Image (tube, rainbow, N blue to C red):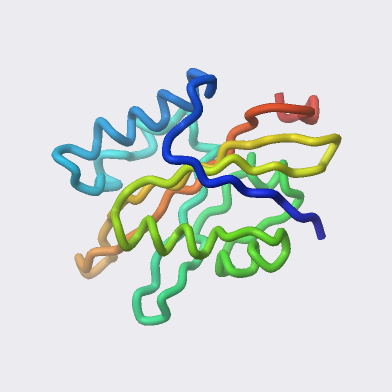
Length: 163
């Protein structure tokens, strides 16, 4: 079990990697007139260069909780854990984080959230955690709220295999 240090920030840092900025700008472009983007717009073709970085957390309104539908391969590689099928509350228990509360904020206000996460792995590392609200529909056409959760290396040591 490892513990992470979180600092929630109002926007991406100015020195965030261009690839990370482009990811967030792609979301903003799809969020026309302040609406939450639809997954039909933010599809696999549009997001192809970040596909291994995006986890999908689906909101379960009756439980006021989430289920991790897809756990991104790059997040699994960085954390050494796979949480697919779990609640983000388990991540908070394992790492001492506040992911669950942040996800609720994203669902409640429909706005992205950004965080710098410090983590001791191969040495001290900082990652950017990005939470982007999206919407979809289930098989019956009922609206489904989801959050794209992504982590991108920001500063410090990084495993050579993660590039």
